[in-house]
Each structure stands twice: as C-alpha cells, then as structure tokens.
Amino acid sequence: MLMIERIADLRRQVSLWRQAGERIALVPTMGNLHAGHLQLVDAARGPADRVVVSIFVNPMQFSDAGGGDFEHYPRTFESDRKKLVENGVDLLFFPAQEEMYPAGFKDVTQVQVPGISDILCGEFRPRHFVGVATVVAKFFNMVQPDVAVFGEKDYQQLLVIRRFTGELCFPVEIIGVATVREADGLAMSSRNQYLSVEERRRAAALYRVLQAASERLASGETDIAAIESAAIACLKDAGFRPEYFTVRRAYDLQPAAMDDAELVILAAAWLGEARLIDNLPLRRQCTVPV
Image (tube, rainbow, N blue to C red; front, side):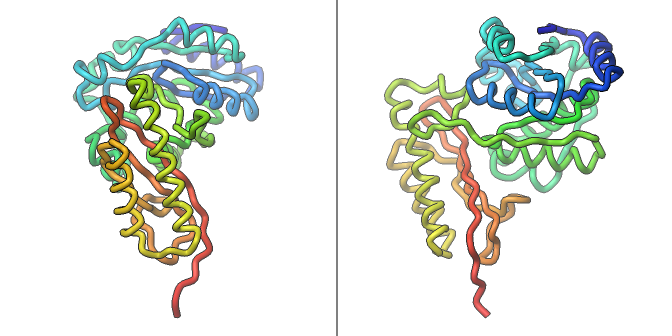
C-alpha cells in the first residue's frame, strides 16, 4: 500500500493510474476504522481498479475545532494502517492540517448546501455540513475519483454530498453502503467507544425504537407526529437524551406527508458522553383519500 501525505505526490500517482486506463475509487474517512469502514472499502473495490482511502480529522466540521470533541476524537493511525493493508487498499492519503488548509480553515472558500445542511443534525451542529462538504469537495479535486463511497448511517451527510456533487458537476458516482451493525443492532460508529459498559448495553434500544416506528408506519398508521412522540418517550425511558426523532421524505429530508412512499426515519440522541445517530429507510404503500 502506498502512503502519501502531500497533495502533489497524490496527484502524480493518480495521474499514472489514469494514464494506464484504471478506474479510481475514493473512501474518505477520519480514521479510527472499524468493520463499517472496511465494508466501504469492499464496496469501492467492485467498480474500480484502485482504491484510495483518506484519513483526515477535519477541524472544519467540528463546532469546537481546537478544543473538546476535535481534540479528543480517537486517532488510531497505526491500527488503521494495518487494517487498510490487510484489506488491499492501494493508497492511503493522510495529509496534515497545514496541507489541507495552508491558510487556515476559518476564512477560506466553503461549500454550502442550502436547505438540507441546517436541519436535523445541522440544527444541533451548526456549520458541520459546511465542513463536510468543503473537505469532500477538496478530496474530489485532489483524487478526481470515478466513484466515492460513503455509509448510509450518516444519511443526511450522504444526501448533502450527493446534492453538491451533482450541482457542482463533479464527474463522481456516489455509492451509499448500508449501515453495518453490531449483533444487537447498534450501528457501528467510532463514537461507540465513548460508551460505558452499562451504556453500551442500553445503546441498542435506539435501533429497536427505530424498528418499532418503522413497523407502525408499514402497518398503515398515518399519525406521524404520534409515532415520533412515542419514540422520543421510549428513548427517554431508556436513558437517552434525544435531539430528534423524525420521519422524513427520503430524497430531501422534508417532513413526510400521507402520500410519500419513500421515507427515512432518523434519530440523534445522547447516551452519556456519546452522541449516537441512526436511521431506517422505509418504502410503504400509500393510499391517499379521495
């Protein structure tokens, strides 16, 4: 596996692959890799000849960059490197912050996706998706991949990336990969390690509450507000501090209506020091009264 820190070296290597007619896939990560990340690598290998993985803890997407959450985000580079070698990655790009943001990241050109970036997680994490969209756009320019692979666990993030990729005319196919779960249903996440033993035992309740809401919607219930309220109450009873639990249209995350068939149920809630997010997509049969 090639290991590259500098943008110029990355571009030279990618150019050689392109001259050889090879297709390139990109998997952007912030490191601290788990089985969910490696599933993205597996998905990238199918449509491409070369797989590039980036590891960069992006300060622009942290509201407290330079402090708390950013500083304590787990960095496990050597373990990550070994996993990527074992999984056949062709190139690991791990730039320093100064390489990505030579003029700093406070007053630089930014990518903002209106309408979808300031709701749900965007409401509770202001400018988070500006940071995500900006750094992913930079990676697209650096790597110029044919495909890029992202997890569906971060559903809102996936929609933000799909939107700006299309609207800014990046010639990149965006592939979403289904959420990878632990045996009890908890979505795999780097933040799960913030859970205590007891909190980890209770954490799977988030997935169960999503499943219960999905079953109610699939059975034909139409009172979405009641379903959302019941879910919030269940999460609180399980010891969570919910930020939101909501049923939305799958394609734009606007509130769902009776005649919407393609839905996604999304939740974000704190359990101890860990902020957990999860979602379940749902396709339902809709009968609209005449």
